[in-house]
Amino acid sequence: MNLFNRLFKTRADKAERQPISPVIYVSTPKETPQHTSLKDAFAQKYPKYTNILSMFEAANLCEATWENVTKVRLQTFIDYMNERLSPNSVSQYATKFKAVLNLYSDEVTLPRGFAKVLTPKKCAVQNVYLTEGEIQRIVNYSPKNEREALVQAQFIIGVLTLARHSDFVNFDEGNIVGDNLVYVSQKTKIQSSIPVSSTLIRFLKIQKEIINKGVTVSDDSFNDIIRRICAKCNINEPIKLYQRGETTLKPKYQYVSSHTARRSGVTNLYLRGLDLLTIAKIAGHNNTATTMGYVCCGIRELPREAKEYFTGF
View 1 (cartoon, rainbow, N blue to C red):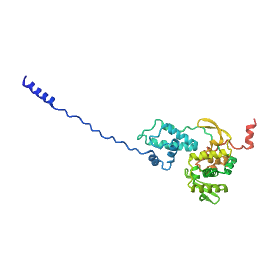
View 2 (view 1 turned 45 degrees about the vertical axis):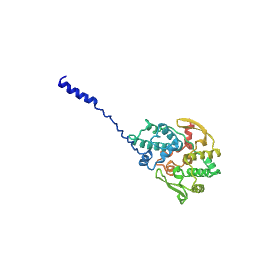
View 3 (view 1 turned 180 degrees about the horizontal axis):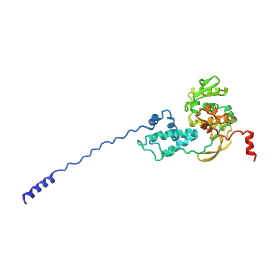
View 4 (view 1 turned 135 degrees about the vertical axis):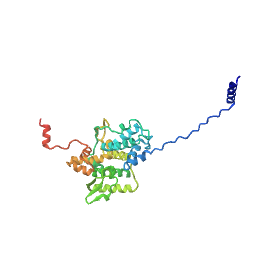
């Protein structure tokens, strides 16, 4: 073996005898990104509209978190609002929810197609109103407990003031100025002035007394209780309405909700011949188009000349 071969053989032998050091992998803990919570995100963008998330939670019986936002839950949330709010409010609240989700869509995982769910379809929706005779039955009703008394008082206050539920639950005698009840709408910031009656004053006192005792009623409970009161007042005429894309036939009381008070006030004033602009000012609306959406009846009694057009051929 020549010198060259001996040299390389020696080096190879040494390499075979040298132990191989094991490779040690050091795992670095993966940092979990800290996202802004859904509630904080909403509070930052719409601090005055956190009630939207409260409705989401009430509709789905779960906490409002990014993880709990699914298409099914968003649709349940829309359906929940449709039962309780005007179409205009449903559209506004859904748009705000969608804006918050869009803003954080790069930071959190959201269901595909959430924007479509939060864009309610514009379709014809029918609602009921209570006639003046039916309202009088509720005024005369003798409540069985304080919760019924509170709901009765608040519903009649809503009927007589055309105010939103979020406004009239805060009314008391301090709102009375002269012969009118005066307040500024929380939603539109429009001041309204409504003539005061002895019936309104009586129910304002009842509302204040019961609330001071710590009695409260949730939105869902309010609707259940007012429907029960209406049923006891025999407001049970079969009514066929088109809602959520289908026609349903139910006793009238089953269609009643807290918002029916406002619709009833608007509709009855319209039927009495009051112009839409004045009704809009009383109801705290920005325009008469919104007010017309609250009118839950056909055209009012036509003048004789107009009737002759339809019967003259």
